[in-house]
Amino acid sequence: MIRAAEQRDIAVIEAHSKVFWEQGYIDVPYRDGSALPLIKLCLSQKLLLVGEIDGDVVGFAAGCKVPLMGDNTIIQGTELAWWVAPEHRGGRVGLQLLKGLEQAAKNAGCTYWSMVYMESSMPKTIRDIYLKLGYRLNETTYGKRL
Image (cartoon, rainbow, N blue to C red; front, top):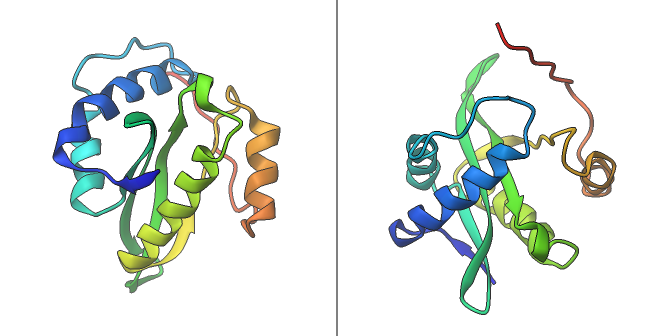
């Protein structure tokens, strides 16, 4: 089941955020509590969902919204995290979270929505899902430690 996140979900979303963080390329250990400001921002913008199986939160999707740079009367949004615990991947939860986040973004007034993926986490599978759902490649991001 996919549903809007609530205050009571914050701790479990942070726990999933820690595992999500460890899958990325940045070699900084997760500091407890670090995801909380972003989790609360996404919750306040109504762009935070959880996926449940048998009452347990097994994943989440989070995004935020801002005015479009070229026309600040238009709202754009972006996914900050789309995560399903590895033992629950391959089912429908991930796709339902993505589609739910798109709908939440529409409900929150977003005209444009962006999704990203990590090269360290099933990039071909995720790219194929995005293309099938009508996304197109707009940018490529590179990162380094300064």
